[in-house]
Length: 294
Image (tube, rainbow, N blue to C red; front, side, top):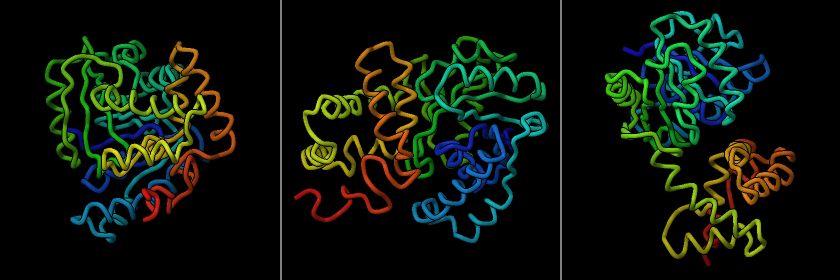
């Protein structure tokens, strides 16, 4: 049913979603707001190829390269939407930015096109107010490192057609994901409802100077056997994304943490794994070294 897919937003997660769709046989177009953003998205998709091939043994390097070559990139939204079956929006986690995108997409999209948001924290019912087809609007949330952490959380809003969640489950399976049906609207879905308090606790300890990020991660990793601590995960999620989520909170402490992240990391171009540096330096972060847990 959903063969031609438009990924709106070629950031860290959008580029991964595009790659995952492409290597599973979908006709993929990536849209971003400028030619520079499009060029950056194209580089991101290519850079994720090696990770995907390493994790998914069934997909060869040659196949992945061939599939990537078929992806179309554009900064022209109106032309990008022509003939599209499904739009997956992965623009920054800002209600104003999402409103601007969905207003424009509603004007240009074909009547049959289904809309989905990858928002990690905003309720789909809030975003549905900006679209011209709320019955065809749903949330479809991917976790970072899409092909490996391959959950696809599906969350309807009150006006979503009753049969659309099942259609999205089928689509998720077609692109190698495990569909997780969320039965009612919940900020953060399942994953982030569990994950965010954990990450917030780590950031609380850092923000208040209680312990350094590496010591916080070391404590968690030794005590639980987890391969990541909160700051290793934050680097994967992306520090700009984390800051944007925190900025939506009315809590003064969350605002303070967001400002600290902005000043000490985002403004310095340290966005996490995407840029090669965040709380750790990549591709060989300290927490993956043999002596880190000693």
